[in-house]
Image 1 (cartoon, rainbow, N blue to C red):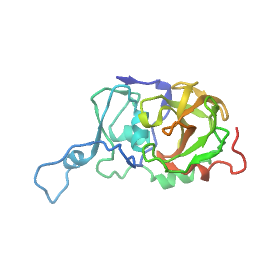
Image 2 (image 1 turned 135 degrees about the vertical axis):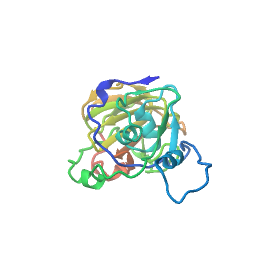
Image 3 (image 1 turned 90 degrees about the horizontal axis):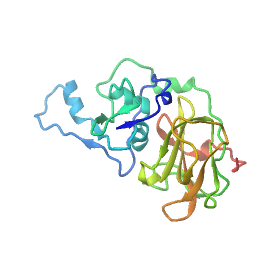
Length: 241
C-alpha cells in the first residue's frame, strides 16, 4: 500500500489535461473484444481507456509523473475521494471517460494564474538539451561536481521524494502552485522528504551521477503535468542560486 502525507493534497479542483509518457511508460490496456456498435457506451469507453496497475511503493504523484498527466486529473478520472490512498493491484484509468460539460477549459484556467519566478537549481553548464533523454521525458541536464548543492528552483511543497522511477534515480518533485511542478533527478542524496515545505534556493539534495556516469542533475518543469523547456523559464543571466 502506498500512503502519503494527507497534508500534501490541500485542494482537488483542477481538472483537464492528458499526455502519455513519450517512451517506455505505456500503461496496461484492456481490449474490447466485443463486436463494434454504432453507438459508444460508457462501458465501451472504459474498456478502451489506458490503465495502470499500482505497484508497491508507488504514489499517485509518481504515477502521474510517469505518464505526464496532472495528478488532480488522475484522481478525478478514477473517482478518488482520498488521493493519498491507493493500494497495490488497483487499476487506475490514465485518461478521461466520456466528455463532461462540467469544468473550465485548461486554457481559461491558466490565463488567470500568476507566473512563477524561477532560479537555477545548481551551478553549472547545461550538459544535455531539453528532451535529449527519452527515458526521463523532457528536461535538461545541468553539470557540476559529485555532492554539489541542488536547490529548489522555486518555493513549494515536496510531493515526491524517492527512487521509485528508476530512470530518474533519486528524485524530488516540488509542487509550486496550481500550475507548476519542478523535478530534480539523479541525486546522490535527498535532504527533504514528502510533505516538506521548501523556499526558493533552499538546499534539497546533493548532486549524483547520471546514466553516462557523469555528475549532473536532471531538471524538469511541468505545467499542468506537461513538460516545458526549462530554459524558456529560467533567468538567462544567472545559473547560480
